[in-house]
Image (cartoon, rainbow, N blue to C red; front, top):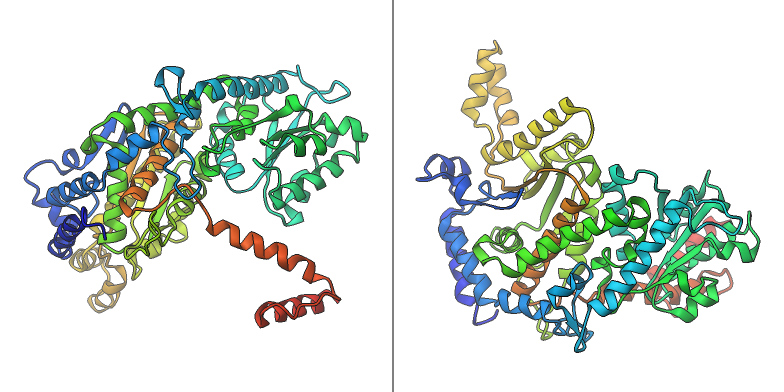
Amino acid sequence: MSTKTQAHWQALSADWKRLQTVHLRDMFDHASENRFETFSCSVDDLTMDFSCERIDADALDNLLKLAVAADVEGARDAMYAGDAINTTERREVLHVALRGERADGYMVGGAPTADLVDPERDRFLQFADDVRDGTYTNAQGARFTDVINIGIGGSDLGPVMAVRALTDFRESGPNVHFVSNIDGAHLTDVTQGLNPATTLILVASKTFTTIETITNAKAAKAWLQTALSATDADANLAALSTNMDATAEFGVAADRVFGFWDWVGGRYSVCSSIGLSVALSVGSANFREFLSGFRAMDQHFKTAPLDQNLPVLLALIGIWRRNVMDCPTVALIPYNQRLEFFSDYVQQMDMESNGKSVTKSGDTLTRATAPTIWGTPGTNSQHSYFQMLHQGTDIIPADFILCANPTSPLDYQHKLLTANFLAQSQALAFGKTSDEVRTEMLAKGVAADEAEALVPHRTFSGNRPSTSIVYADHTPFSLGRLIALYEHKVFVQGVIWGVNSFDQWGVELGKVLARRVEPMLDADADTSSLRASTRGLINAINALKG
């Protein structure tokens, strides 16, 4: 534990000891001022309400003091300045430069990032528009009707989420599909019914060596060649990579290779050429609006005082939940069908960034880090796992997200959606007492003995925390702003925990072992060097193959 923050952690522990037995009903009933006004914060049309979290003004003050002691502001400034804050890989962390403007002054290696970012952004956005309007066609002059993005991890999750989220802005763009899983069923399912001749394949791999991506890319190229000659099939290929030799060998012309930089982590790369699939779906103008939303939150995070800084406040609420309340998981529930993949995206962003057990200096952590992030859209989620959220043995905090205006012409459905969004935070916070349950059943004519037997089953303890985020309209701008809110939240938490949020060594071990095991799957392979469990499973698998 850092000596600079030790006293603040102790103060937070004392706050929880004081608040642990206080119910949210009492916090609202006994507030001397409007609790919503005290525990909410807004930037333009975006409002975050954390009044249903189990904190009071003293606890919030101590959380802010913890952020100051951990030097969140200094770490933030170092990131924006282009310092190599990814210490284990000796890299800068400048995904903010991908959506910045030259006037923002971002620098890397002593040179403006705009000198790198702007030309490459213009290139891939021009290509996107050329495909969309038919300027760039297949070798026979036919327009592309479909696009398949082949990637995995950060080269897949961000684009998948954003393309789905911005469905309403596609207009005349091609149908965009995604393949990530090495399971051949994924590529087979996606290509089913598509015309290879009019399908553009994007291969997204910075190094062009990611085994899942390259294996799928080779299979996709073979699929193209079922309808096109080898030479013509190459016109249906583009790559998002920095390995020009490998892309050329694969058959991708240099003018269809779009790069990005090692100071952009994969899970933060959707604003780079990795977002080409998004631009192909919605066009360059909407993609630039998407970037503007990111930049708006970047500027807010960079300049707003900590106590009015949305990413900082969201991060501190998460610290309170994870480290003070000892809640190991968070449900992220967007009340917006367009955001059906948002929870998956944030899951990677959060858990791959801060799922660490050592500090930046290599010391073993004594404090819990990244919670498990999971969730699906409301109201579907209410009919699956919300039973556990309301009455289960574990306290599971929730983040709820709502767009105030509908994303469809069905206004009444949106009214019901909004009512459910509001009802869930209310039900989690305030619950339903046994007296309320008993009185309600007796008023409905339920017999006294039957009512008494049912009271324990219909009682809701409440006092379960949630934060609600609302904004006006679901647009490319608002989506970019929302993503950046969670990006910077993750950054702040990583600073407070003292971890490097920008490496992911834990991803590598499984890949190395898979390469070692793969040749041993042959029936005559020598598996004696493997441990008994792996050797036994290989034997069982081979036996099942008959």
